[in-house]
Amino acid sequence: MRGKPAIKISDEAKKQALASIRRYFDDTMDEAIGDLKADLLLDFFLREIGPTIYNQAIADARGFFEERAADLDGICYQAEFPYWTTPGT
Image 1 (cartoon, rainbow, N blue to C red):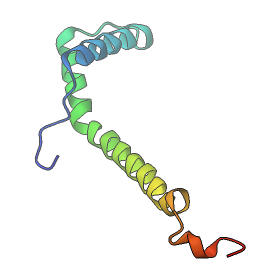
Image 2 (tube, rainbow, N blue to C red; image 1 turned 135 degrees about the vertical axis):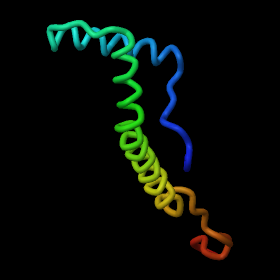
Image 3 (cartoon, rainbow, N blue to C red; image 1 turned 180 degrees about the horizontal axis):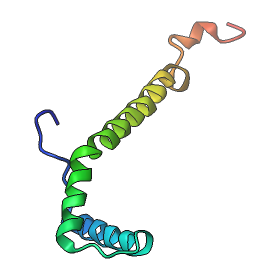
Image 4 (cartoon, rainbow, N blue to C red; image 1 turned 180 degrees about the vertical axis):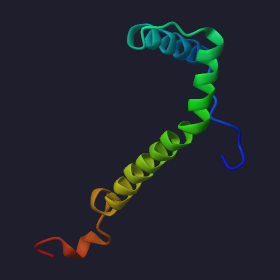
């Protein structure tokens, strides 16, 4: 991701996000926001806040996998040469 442009979302996700922004402004700000302003606002958030959310998601995923990897010995360990450690032999 180094040197990559702002986070991109699919056309469908962008369409839904823009509709959500317009609805939020209608309901919360008591004023309408046009398509261009909603698009500019979404682009700003994707550039400015998107990387923070992305980085946190990567950190969460890394933590999840590191935790699972730490359990591998306990979960997947198989005793080696068990014949001579069997009781009665």
